[in-house]
Length: 79
Image (cartoon, rainbow, N blue to C red; front, side, top):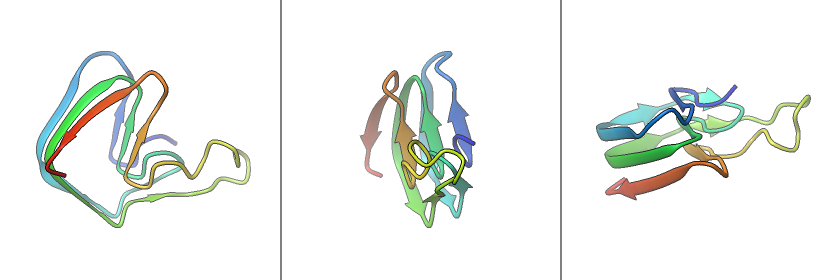
């Protein structure tokens, strides 16, 4: 599973301005999984977790708060 709270599949620009992500869990990107361009501003991340999956030990467990794929980009400000 990608992105415990938000999965951005690469279909356009994602912008998140303000807020918090608390205690989200996924295999990759405990809070956010980004496969395209994203801007994240004024956001707090607390206790997000990327869990290891025994069926996918190579790729799972990446990005405790944010996972950015090779095709994604991230502009993070005041996080």
